[in-house]
Length: 311
Image 1 (cartoon, rainbow, N blue to C red):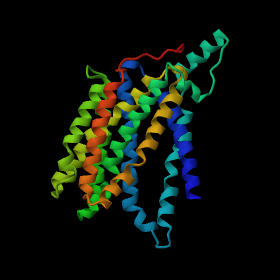
Image 2: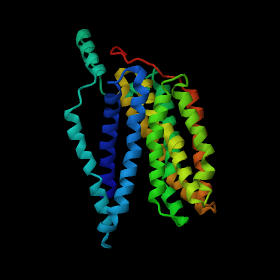
Image 3: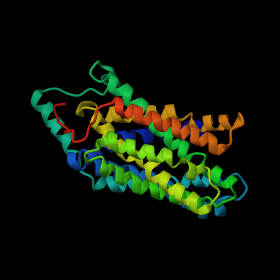
Image 4: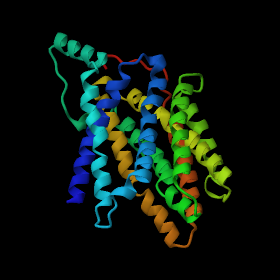
């Protein structure tokens, strides 16, 4: 039952992401799309921070010992989704989509709802490349975050301050690097700088016992190592033409999520083979970070790309 419900959640989450990302970014002009991308992606770290606060202050009161605690937490997780209905009332349809509909009406044609469009010769490389790139980004993010609370617990420190520092860094870093990607560095340069500094921050992120250094490491890793994600929504939407933007971005992101879903298991397997948790995490962060940089530079720069109804 849990497997089936999680699968249904994935369908809903995937659908909201695929439709919501282009809906959001198509409202913004090209020269501000990086900022919008960073703001949008920072919501992920904001949600992580809020869930950490709920776990810290609510979970002890609902964990009655009757196997109800995790169930309460899952039900509480439904509450933010109700905001979607409120937000939808105030959001206008994408002007790019409206232009597209007028173009189709004028030309007496129509779009087809088919994943096959992503694998036609003109888009297949884009589809494969962005899917692998998203896998690398998410592999790095999971390497940073998934086992982090366990690591802090092993060090006998309270987890909330460090999770808060990590996600405050992620919020500010996503916005900052989204904004930076609008300048001369572009999407590729901004993501590269953030990722490189994130890799360099590994020693103070996982290899120190000093609380001040751990806090600084969490903030730094969040700002750079997770902040590199600030370019992702903008970059994905800019890689696909209007006719396939939502399906392309949604497909690439969630194929990448599927590829990166092995990350927690891989870190656990490395521990089973004798590696300390900090070493296993650092190896996966560094390896995936290098892959992010390589894949970013194998693709084109997209800064300033215009959205056209005829694409």
